[in-house]
Amino acid sequence: MPQASQLIAAGKGLAPVLLKRAPTVELDWDIRQKSRFDARLSDGRALAVFLPRGRVVRGGDVLVTAEGELVRVIAAPQAVLRITACPAHPLAEQAFDLMRAAYHLGNRHVPMELKPDHLKIEPDHVLADMLRAMHLEVAEASEAFEPEGGAYGGQGHGHSHGHSHGSGHDHAAPGHPHDHEHGHSHDH
Image (cartoon, rainbow, N blue to C red; front, side):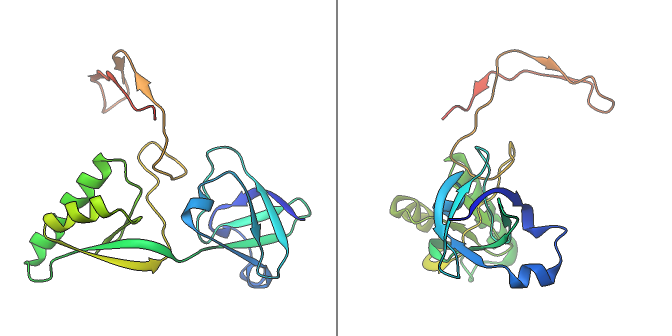
């Protein structure tokens, strides 16, 4: 069974002809945010993936096996909630409604994909009810899901990040001469 422990983000630097010939692996978000998993290639072979902890695989990335074989990653369609603004509202109000929804979902650390005209989250009936109460339209769909990576991040999943600052620290860089107090922790 081929084993992949390297990843080339978005296949950057690889010749399109090589990518066209490469087998594919179709993975949903739950699998792509794991660093170790088994999968089935488009040619039927099994693939074992061993990536560094915290590394997230995105649709369009390329895995590299120990033998140097390339494997294109496809973000599999999966159940999502597609959130759109009420089309009866003026455009400026629609943009604000989506921004407000993103704020409330982000405040709950919900993995979310942002698009210019809609948001996507994994199915959750409580969140769907909250969004409908905010006069947004929520529809079930089966689509690829690529949530935002987050401000601290790096690699992309909204489930765990750890940082804490217990005391003030000085950013004495040009253009940023003031102190910040950070007395919070986000350990999940």
